[in-house]
Length: 354
Picture 1: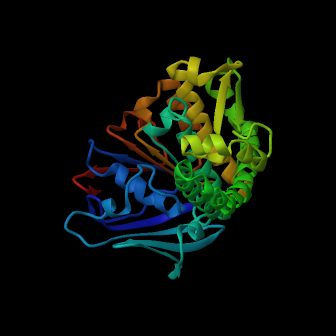
Picture 2: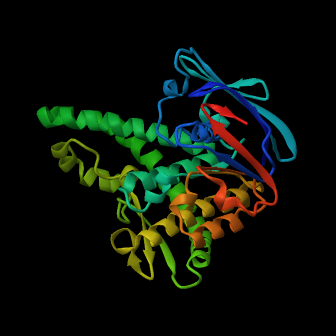
Picture 3: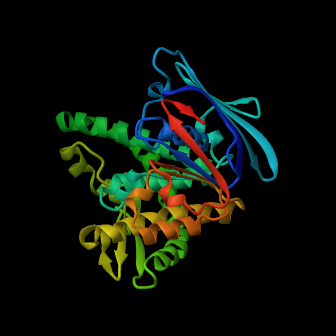
């Protein structure tokens, strides 16, 4: 997969931008707050996922402007394609000039991985960030998963509202049945998707981690399911009274987690800062390998200001590993890329790219 050109109008501080990136390495160099990450974010939106910065869509429109437009021409499966996103009071998506209904239809047409400083805390933070990693990665490969997840989350929210009412009026319990059916049906599908994806990660990430650690350490990955080996239906019914007391749904994929162990020791609790960063790096590179294995195409790699966060050995590993990919890397100075043979270096300043 290769991006041939990118055109942006009024996207954050990028007013009018047109660039033709190199098919391999693209370095976006400039001081902080000049617009480097904005370009990375704009490219990422074509995966169909939400912003990796957790931004609201209306925040992406330049000040004093009513809308933003982003367009890319790219080659996928040997075919040149065009995709466009227009954000005004809503988001409008187009693929080959045909309007599509929702972001889930965008998913699967354009694949990318993004690695940002936030991902370096993928191991450190709570379970929500690890579940999001799974959901975004799976959603790119299986667009149907996005709709299943939306339906599940909606049912959980509605069940939680009823649980709070049941605490005051127990006669309302019968209202829980319909939402629990949705939670069970969608939840079991989500768990199956996640377990399948984790099995794929377990084949690739430990090998990548072995290379990063120079074969000194072994990475093990485990999906922790809150239904604890029992069926989701059985567990929901068992915990219904407790959930009414607490006012929340305490079991389901929205409560699940991933555990990473290095040499059989929990990395989150006992790993060094370097080990945690290495695990996060292995996960993101593994995500790319899985995309290539399933789709047959190498995804676009978006690396946002991570080189400064990694030591020299990890910098060298990531640059060697992504050789031959189309890559966009943001940085404040080009010292990490002195030996760049193939690629382009773009300067980003005050919302302009040249």
